Image (cartoon, rainbow, N blue to C red; front, side, top):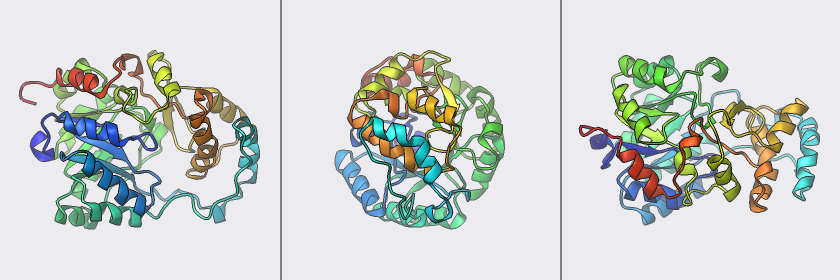
Length: 346
């Protein structure tokens, strides 16, 4: 795996949509792993600028991540936001905001995003919520960019393998953040890492990276015993001071136990794993949740203000089931712990 990625260690940083930082991405790459940066919602100019900043921060390989469209995304012109805005009005008022006006678009054009990434030429492009076209893979390879897909089931891994990706992340249901299933509903794709990884390894022809529930050397060793060629770690790094998580988010992770996370659609309209708080509970109790990406845009308005105000009760507290093992506060400490679990041949 290290030979493919150009890294010293087969350790990848999970890309945090909205919580990535230049500092953390560069730190993981400088430590010998593959830093990852989530570009969800970024316009093309911001993508180019972010990749330029990453290249200034590290000369080592790093990955950037984009979400592929699944086809069920709603657009503002096809949806009356009034009932959803009304349901969230108390949360807007809580942070001193007026209810937002509907936008002209919830998300940038994905083709324009992909064009910007290819022009900027990061070492690796990772993708979630779908399989890339052969044309996209060929365009990336022509620019020296590796393409890595993400699977939550064996069927998704097989589809990714057929698309020509260079490696596949097998994301177990323990993982924090969004469940990135794309062939079936995420509720029907909740396969744990221990069951998913060896079955994916047996089904595909490219290296497999294990993700979900890995936070220390024991998880790394287990992933390699299951046949993985590398590991992708999110929550353990999200707690570190180098991430863009708020202090309240870090405290929530630090205080989490094995049963502290739940799966919810409340914050974005898509199923995701996080630590429950007031916002999640009140939205779920209302029973009024807009489809993706409308809900993500609507809650994003008060979440941004709440984050600036240091309020952990009104932000998305994404975390995985191994949050209780996320005990280290710097990227270097996390990385050293993970590297200790890589077998000598890894």
